[in-house]
Amino acid sequence: MAETRVSAATSPNGAVSEESLLLAHLQRLEHAPAGCCAVLCHLSDLQAPYRKAHFVRIAARSFDTLTNHFDATLYVLANSDVALVCRNVRVEDIDTAIYKLRALFAEDPLAAGAGADGVDGFATWYDLSEWADLADLEEAIAGREAELRQNQEAAAAGGPPMVPLDAAGLVQLEKRLHVLRLTDVVRQQPAVDVRPGRGRSILFKEHYVAMAELRQRIAPDVDLFASPWLFHYMADILDRRMLAVIGRMNFATLKDAISLNLHVGSVTSPEFKVFDEQIGEHSGKVIVEIQMVDIVADMGAFIHTRQRLRERGYRLLIDGLFPMALQFFDPGLLEPDFIKINWSPDLGRDQRSRQRAELGDMIRYIGPDTFVLARAESEDAIRWGLNLGLHRFQGFFVDKLADAMASKGLM
Image 1: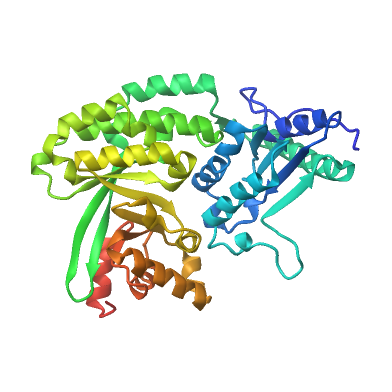
Image 2 (image 1 turned 30 degrees about the vertical axis):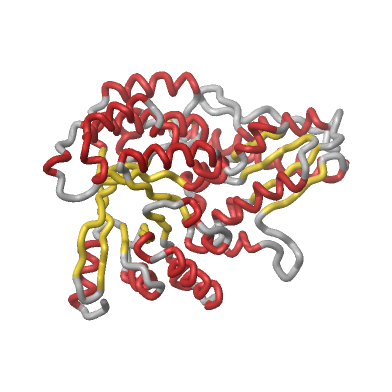
């Protein structure tokens, strides 16, 4: 076992890095490693579009069941890898969480499992009761911790770096949020129904907070994504502020339906009750978008929320799905009004005809009217969707793109 102990990497506000916390955890296990194991998921090796903070937060929440009900701790590392350390947790239970994680990133080749060499590049398991495995993981994390500390020192030499969001900082941010004119950072993005030869129409307009602009206004020196859990708490605050802003709109004169991306908990909040009373009989003009990861985290709460929305006349959209994830489960069982799947350029380069055929079968089985292809910001995206029978798209300037493609005879 390596005897070297390194000082903890800390941010300028004194917060200890996840690498340091994980290393300290492993060092404590040296004295009683029985029944312990770890899994390191190499999300840093995913293709660039899937390494974004949004996807890492979704990945972290895939382990909520384990961390909430078992002796298990999750660490989100600086390079986007996630490490799970467990004691006396069944391998089958851990496998279930890893399976869900693979499904989230199913369209990335890394998630496919072991390659021809028998090595699984997506996840590495460590039996921490074995001296060699514990030493290997300690050495790897110690190296990352040292590298992180060096990067922090280099950044400090060039000027003040962004600091991670911690609990104390969140209190200050909440105060700033309550005095911020939220309408200044609310943006709209249309979803368009495109019918070749029949033109296009607006399906709905999604209202969302432009996070980059929000950060510049209330916390330009804070990394809002450093802690997935604290960010989730801040997102709940934004949900409630958004409901207050949208609730003041004149829905009687509203031409197009709108959508709001809300957490399950926000739908049961007092703010949503006020919003519901404000819009009254016009609830049919509102589509509530719920992230798939929220549904997986608490299926019972989702079913209750779905029933409540249906009774009041709202429509439900499930967001945060990758197209290839449809091979792993049938989202139609969740009975949504819409399912939003995300386009990426890799889909256009995918030559796996069998998987494309299976995806097309699933779309036809559930019904193409149910699907919206998001991030459709190129001709390739729209052409790919049309070839699979899709005709509803969302993306910046997607309406202008559809008109341009029609004028060129491409649709």
